[in-house]
Image (cartoon, rainbow, N blue to C red; front, side):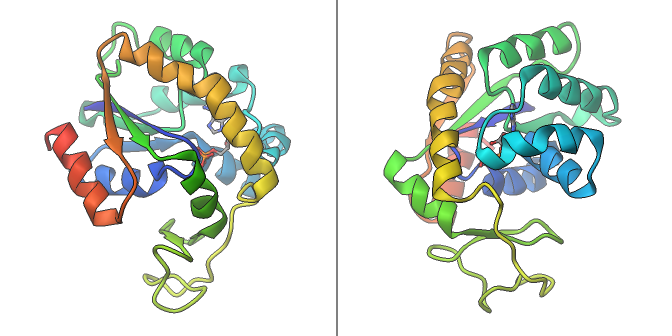
Length: 215
Ligand code: ADP
């Protein structure tokens, strides 16, 4: 399966990507995670992306497209397919991605869209904490760790993303409506889109996802 997972910031793409990756043994590619990793290591790509991501703006298409292209070229087990989270996020990225994957085994065949009402997103984003070591994602309101502030798996102190504040979130939501929602329309016309209601508890949503994807 070559799948894109789409949805507004806070829709749960990261959380369910982790479950889908395990269930289907897919290569998981998250452009947000790749940017954050490069920023924390201080690479040239990280330095270029830092000011955009922290303000909640999209990184320029030329930078992001090149990063994804390099990643795909270096993918070793292409047969397993992929789960791409956070890309394409603009129509130009979608067109560039189509060009990159044309005539290969990597063309998109499924687009999963996670639907959450806008009012719910702020609560999810401001309550989100994650483990810098294993990547597990928590929410202080709806999915807290067993012991406040530390990861259930490895006891590491949880951290909050720099862009998970109300000001950056506003920009991220604007970017989403302006640039990313049209991408859903682009894939809808190709007949690839499945929507899932992503409001509710984690187990319920997971059951719905498995049902719409028939897995
Ligand atoms: P979100 O929770 O907002 O969906 P992500 O972790 O996917 O966050 O992305 C975080 C930030 O990384 C974005 O706000 C943006 O600055 C940058 N980014 C990630 N993917 C892309 C992309 N495809 N195009 C441009 N910028 C991106």
